[in-house]
Image 1: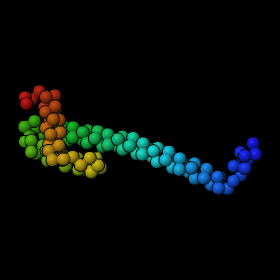
Image 2: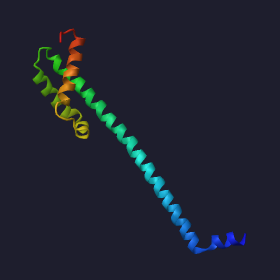
Image 3: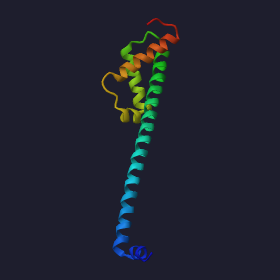
Amino acid sequence: MDLIKQLLTSEQLLGLIVTAIGLVLTVIINRAAAAFTLATGIQIEKGHRDALHQAIKSAVESALYHGPDVALGTLKAHVVQHLRESVPGALKALTPGDGVLDRLVERYAHEALTKIGEPK
């Protein structure tokens, strides 16, 4: 009992215990912060992706409102301009590579044309 009392009153041992507790807490906090960043980063990216897809859909529908015979190049230009105005944060965060927006526009244009009964 006296040995435990002496150990607990030793300044060197208390300093070592405080340092060890600080190290353990630092590791726990760093892991929690990394997990939080990973979780929110994924959620933020999903939000940008959903916003981008929704903006493409609405821009395609808007462009096709002018007529289903609008040229694909004109349609793509209309959609890209709409994206720059409506979801610039999503474009900046996701930075879609070459051809990605074109393929998405073509996909949603095909879906929209199919809905209104136009051939491929």
